[in-house]
Image 1: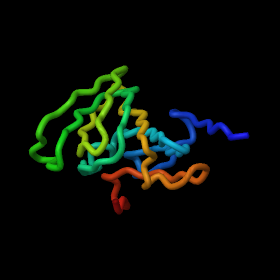
Image 2: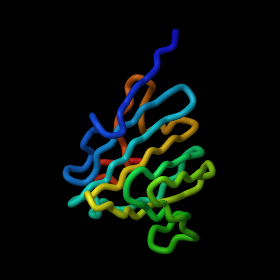
Image 3: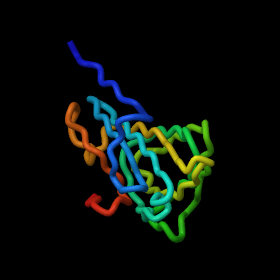
Length: 139
């Protein structure tokens, strides 16, 4: 019988950038889920990096974000504004990057669901955190 995977978007997140980014990745057979929690003081110092992957549904839980479309971080083709409670559906292979806005408690929290699963997250049952703008990111 297949096993369900449970995770919290508030607790047990891995620190990817000290004082700036905590996250959790979960991988299933046909999708991956990434919880990204940017926080002050270090969150604004994480460089935006344009990237593309499968179709993505994003729920902005806390704070906000400007999602820039296109490969150029400095001169995007267009942008989309996300505020708390907004869901965005991004087409597959659409290059994008983002600029975070923090809430009164210093957080910018999003839930990203991507299909097919993001390869950078690893395999089902053995997922690892990854964020394209983090200093150790290779992809």
